[in-house]
Amino acid sequence: MRSFKMEVILNQDIDRIGKAGYIVKVKNGFARNFLIPNGLAVPVTSANLKKLEQEKQQKTLQLEKVKREAEELKAKLARLSLTITVLVHEEDKLYANITSQDLAAALKEEGFNIDKNSIVLDEPIKSLGIYEVPVNLHPEILAKIKVWIVKK
Image 1 (cartoon, helix red, strand yellow):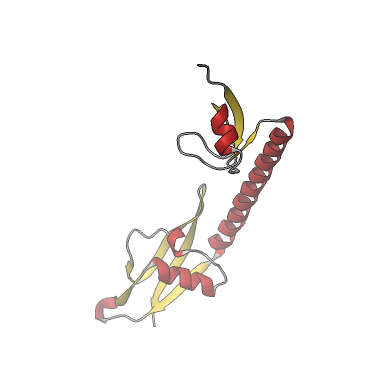
Image 2 (cartoon, rainbow, N blue to C red):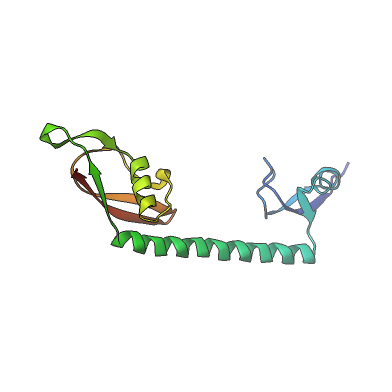
């Protein structure tokens, strides 16, 4: 018995078949009885190919916009000097460590809404001083903020 194949454009990622936006060949019955009725795929037609191309262009433009905004934010953060005042013991040891959450809160006070998970601290800051802390703004963009830890 012969099994005919049909080309479809996937609307969603499907395990062992492909990712959304890809054109794949599947068995006729699988496409007509499952993928298309459930909205998981559409048949390959000139109209659907045109729509797919437009969606890819939109996505590319959106990604470029996000990257451009991250570049602008990096420039603003480079000019920022963040000062955090803390209580200290004798010998200038901090009462409490400075964590990425503390840095995110201090940045928020300065008008920057940056997620604490984007701030790259290998370990909490435990002493007074000047630190350069990396911040992941985008998969391709890493900013550095200058942080001054001073005593009250």
